[in-house]
Length: 166
Ligand SMILES: [Zn+2]
Image (cartoon, rainbow, N blue to C red; front, side):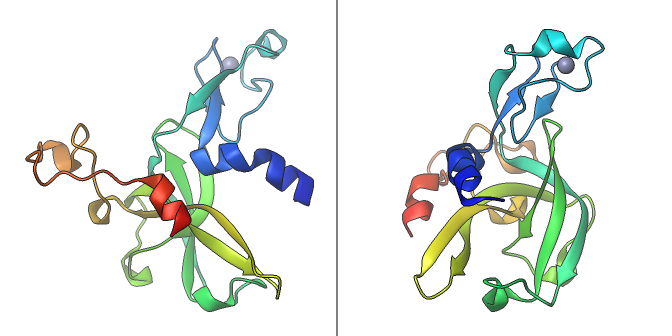
């Protein structure tokens, strides 16, 4: 990906901002300007609506990476997975905060904002989303794990902004 394209798309990549077709309700990430699955897809041009992914999904397939690409050496071995967001789109990202041996197809995960890699001596640091097991992440009080409501006193909310600056 070119530098220009990376930066242009960065805010939406950070926020998992996709789009939804107003006709068939299909959700896309990254966002698209046309819905390719609609019979009359030309009708969707200019009508795609912004849609915020929840960040929740499950592992569809994964691989353990031992030979890292340049800039990722510090992280091996790590798990790269295809995650199907609960809204439909599939994303490729690392799965963290879990022993690689415990990653399984169907594992419920939640997006978390992390440092992706450092680039060269200039120390350019790229941030983006990775996925962590849902059991290991904080749950907002209105969406508790396993359907049981957490006592308000123990409920915590993950703040993306503070992680970004960490
Ligand atoms: Zn459509």
